Structures are given as C-alpha cells and as structure tokens.
Length: 306
Length: 306
Image 1 (tube, rainbow over the protein chains, first blue to last red):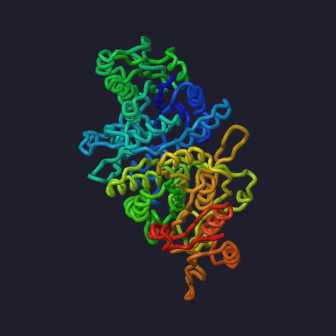
Image 2 (tube, rainbow over the protein chains, first blue to last red):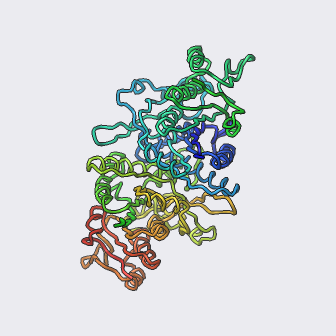
Image 3 (cartoon, one colour):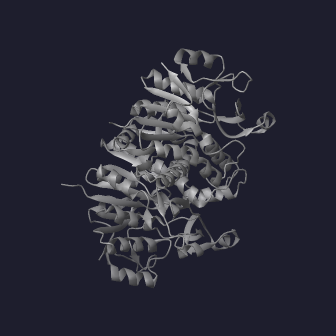
C-alpha cells in the first residue's frame, strides 16, 4: 500500500519553552520530544517537517541592531540564516533519534523560498510577532512597532501572504523518493518575482500559512500543526475554557470573528487548517508538541472538518 | 551518454570582492559571474556547488560578541546560519540565471554536516582565518588569536579535518536524479559522533578540504576549485611570478614545502586537489571565478596531475 504523507508544522515551543531564554542546549533538548515521535511515524508515513523561527529571527534582528560593526542584513537574509540554524538542529536530532530507534531513512533540510505579491496589503501593516515578549511598559520604550499577543507584547514585522513555494516540484520529487524533507523554515524566505529574476523582500511569512500552501501544492494526506496547547480552545484561559476535538469550517469562521482564536497565536493556525480543508485537503489537525503521534491516531487535538 | 559530474567549490570572492564591505546587493551582483557559467555548464554536466563562508561567519561572530542582549551561539550554529544565508543567495541567483537562459533544472540547497574526529590535533591549534582583514597594529589589539595570511592579518579559529560528509548518500541520490546540489556551505557544520548521537563542535572546517572529501565520496569526475587568482602561482606577487598550467603531485609537495602556496590561501586548495587525485580522482583544476567554463574546457587554471 502506498504510504500516506503527513506535513507536520512545528511551532516555536518545539525549540524554546515558556520561561527559557533559548540556549542551544535547551533547544536541542526540547526538540527530542516532537522529533522522536516523528521518527517513529516515519516508518508508516512519508514526512514533511516545517517550522517557525520567531524567537531566532527576533534574536538575529536585535543582535544586528545593537552592533554596527558589520553590514546590516534585510529580514529575508535573517530568515535564510534561521533556516540553516533550525534546519540543522531538527535534522541532526532526527538523525540521532532514527539511529537510536534503528530506523534507516533518507532525509534532508532544504533552503526554501516563497513567492509573495508585491501589492500585498501586508506590506503596509506590520502584523507578524517576532522576538522576545515584553511587558506593556517595556513595549512603550522599544523603537519599533509592537502588538499585544496571547503571550504578551511583541515586536511585529511585515508579513505578506504566501503565493507559492518555489521548491514545490523538488519537494514533491523528494517525497516520491521517500526522503523525509525539512523545509519552509520560518515561513520560507519571502521573494517577489520580477520578470525572470527573484528579489528578496524585507518581511517574514507566517509559517502556518506557508505550511497550508505547501500541503496543498504537494497534495499531502494529513496536515498537522503542532503547538503549545492541546488544540483549538474556546474561552482560552477562562474557567469555562473548552478544547474542541472537532471544528467545522462554518463554526471556525464564527469563533474567529468572536475572538476565540487571537491573531499571532491560534488565529493563523485555525486559518491555515481551514485553507487546507477548503482547498480539498483530506485531513487536518491542530495539536500539542507532545501529542503528535496521538493526534495522527485520532486520539488528540482538534480536527478541522469541511 | 551519461553526463559527467563536476563539483565546483566557490571561494569567498564569489560573494565579496577585494575592497568591498559585503552588502547584500554587492554579494548578489558578484554571484552572477560564477553562477551564470555554472548555469550554462548544467546543460552538459551534473553539478555540485560548495562554497566558503569566511567573511559571513566572521561577521556573525563579531556581531554576537558585540551584543549581549541575546544568547551566544557556538561556531557550528553560526556555520549553519551561513549555509542558509549563502545557500539562498546562490540558489536564487542560479534560479534567475537558469530562467534567463531558458534552462529547466531541479536544484536544491542542502544543510550539510560533517563528522570530525574529537582527537583531531586541530582542536589545540586555531588555524582557519575568518572575518575581516586587519593591519598588524589592529591585529595586536583584538581579543582573539590572529595570523598573518596572504591578505593581511585575520582572526583564526579551530579547524579540524573532515572525516565524512553525513549527507553523502542523499547527495549521491540527488545527483543520480539530475538535481543540481548546493551543499557543504562553509565547510559543513562540524559534528562529532558519540555512539548513536551527533554533537556539534565549536569549530569551522576548511571548505576546500571538505569539497575534496565529498568529491571522493560521491565519485565526481571533475573537482574544480574557483578562487580569486588564475591558478597555482610560483613566486606569487613577485616580478618572476609564474602561473602553473599543470602541477604534478611530487612538484606540488615540494612547492608547498618551499612556501609557494601559503596556509589559509592557496595552500589548502593545492592540498585539496592533491587529496582528490591521490584518492583516484580523475581530474582536478584550480582556477579563477571568472574562468570556470574555460577551465572545464581545459583552457584556463592549474590542473593537478598524478
């Protein structure tokens, strides 16, 4: 029987947990939890892994702003740097976990860039949270736009919509050959196409929306979003909070409007899952980092249904 | 007829030329020269591209040392970041050049890590130049080891020998499928293997030596090293300087001893070419960035012969 393909989008907490500053040792230790599950799943499924880069790209941006000894780099180059950094960390952890489990697989990490539309309204409105979390008082003192998110105040940068993943044909071919593919790190490197050339743009794309686009373009069977909560939750953080084990498109639209799934947090995840289902995707589930295997088995997380 | 495979190792001047500070615009502009030639060669040959990262990894290191707002990262993570950064720049330039030439190819940039020996004597003796060039007076004031190179004084870091490229099987398979592969950026991310796990080490591997290792492990037909001079030169910089169009192993050994090919400059290139030929490699040539096509045709550069 032909193996089904799962695309697993890893959230930032796969690398840095609440209250950690994010040393390299912490990030490698945290990665074992999702990656061990993925290593096991690779015996039954073809696998694509995507990942965020919020804290890492935020750190690079802060670092170059506080040091003027070297040329400043635009955001798309910093995203490319985080693809190398996090891709290596995920791949070498996967390598170790597969060795420990005695599983042999081909696997690679791919630098990925993603076309955006130069007329995207996102260019006029910084919306994507990156970097450290600030208190309200701190947020008033930093020299760049911030926004209140579920975690606290964070810097926001320009974030256009993904139009297409440039390497989609390569990724499809690699999946056909049973490679585990790590790609679209940090939402992909944003580029615009002008006639016969690509140009990077100073922005960051949302990794869940890119993952939905890639899931559609590759035609995966299961699109799984792994984050720091067990799934889509109504009245999150209140006494009456309620995990939804399934969520129909029409209800999701209503809950989004009612503010149950805030922007920069659960909002883009539900949005991404809805896009995949609307574009004839078979199955999508939002779950926590430690329940990836259970969610694939149907025993955890929120399934978004047509 | 089966296409032959060329591995092209791009030197730092493919991205940053003498006298430039290395803005992103400069690096993209410089890349067009080697990459256009490589795009044309891809119609006749299978292609692997490797590249250095000296100035880029030096910049990241300087930057994090001058800013303590974020966690410091070890060298192997900075190498991973430059693989993302430079890999993206090469790949998107290749993409544009192929489009302009109307050539269709599959191509990807691969994060690559390379095993080193934890008992390598290199760990006791920093030897690999990275970062900016200093005057002798400046070199005395910086808080890290420096060494005089052909270009001036530069910071030196630990640089162990490459033992094996971890992704060699993946790269071989990709070449079989006619993918153009960009890999081993900055000499690869150095790791040691402890039983069933990999651990990164705080070091940088020489990109020419890794390229020779990969050329051998993949079994390429031509190993080409592209740099900022036309080839191996006797009495470089003196009135009687002489470009060698061919160089036998025994002569190369003698010239190395006599100091014609200095460490951190032409030395590792001649060393890498000699290793490839000693390990039964078919053909290797050292040439300048703008003469890659001519060198493949046998009309430029230095061929190292058995």
